[in-house]
Image: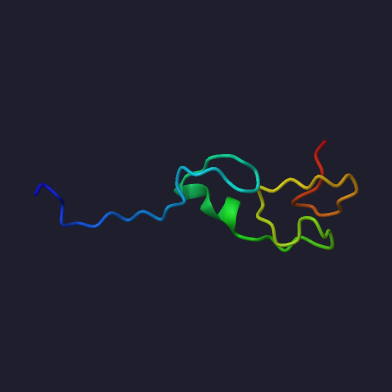
Length: 68
C-alpha cells in the first residue's frame, strides 16, 4: 500500500517516435510533431506537421519542401 494518491499526468506522447519523421520528442516539441501546418497546394504534405519532409522533388511548400 505504498501507492501515491497524486495521479500522474501522462499524455502517452512523450518518448514515442513521431509517425512522420521517426524522431523521439518531448513535451516541448509536441506541436512541431503533431499540429498540422496548412502549407499550400502539395497533395503529399497537406495537413502534415512541420517536422514532415516531403519526398516530392517539385514540392512548392515553404515548410515541407524537398530537401534532397
